[in-house]
Length: 347
Ligand SMILES: C=C1C[C@]23C[C@@]1(O)CC[C@H]2[C@@]12CCC[C@@](C)(C(=O)O1)[C@H]2[C@@H]3C(=O)O
Ligand SMILES: O=C(O)CCC(=O)C(=O)O
Ligand SMILES: [Fe+2]
Image (cartoon, rainbow, N blue to C red; front, side, top):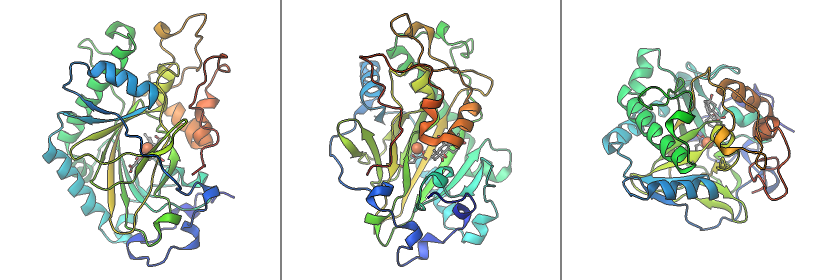
């Protein structure tokens, strides 16, 4: 049975709970974390001359990689983390003043995906989309936005380049080759230490509805990615590294050649974990569909075109089945699209 959206908005101050309430106790059937493989997620040095080759391989086989020498100043990452920590340490009544409305996008609350899971998640989040107000400007400094956008652009061209795509193939690239972006979104996630972490879940298994997500995780383990044939794999924090996830829109754009990665966050008993996700997508009027250079008679387009907001609507309704909902045809015999995440609750 899934929870009604309103139930998901009843907040507990997770920092002060001494025993795991039943509503937060996941069983293995609910997707509770079990064993985990130790296969290391690829680490890519952005300054490496062969970065394009490594990025292509990582996107194809994993849908995720850790990025070093990315050029984002450490101070900027530390400042963002400090601002986020300050925000989450406010009393719950204060945070609830900025609560996201049940149908809204921005604000404080439990993960939007909560209603698709039978139990509550051991986390709280703050979603910032655009920054119309002065307080959001302070939380999300312009420098951070500018730097992350620059990096996301650079990564997108590297990824597209690894597919043989050039500037003329992307109709939403500006004259200088810059990819125009939609109102960027930032997701701050906080996972307080948990009294019974083996029965709790920080953020349930999901893919991001983005082109790319760039994640800064503090020095605390918790992020796990799912890889076909390997199971769940922990993304071990590397000081200063950023984690880059392939999102569903890049999956569609690449006609399934690069797979969006299923991931989740687990919690622990002693450390407060914190992460910041920069969610990068196309401008709202742009329709994303498989690039024509990547399709032919043998490889027909597998997905219909969607705008980011249309896709977010599909995701809000169908969650991990959203990719299947925009799918045009069944996979060819020899082409198994591993990322139609229809049964993802397995731990
Ligand atoms: C742009 C977006 C992607 C996101 C939904 C949102 O409107 C803002 C929050 C994003 C986030 C972050 C946590 C996981 C996720 C699945 C969720 O519930 O909210 C993603 C959404 C997504 O990628 O679909
Ligand atoms: O906290 C994490 O490591 C994962 C966060 C995440 O998946 C998200 O914000 O979309
Ligand atoms: Fe995510």
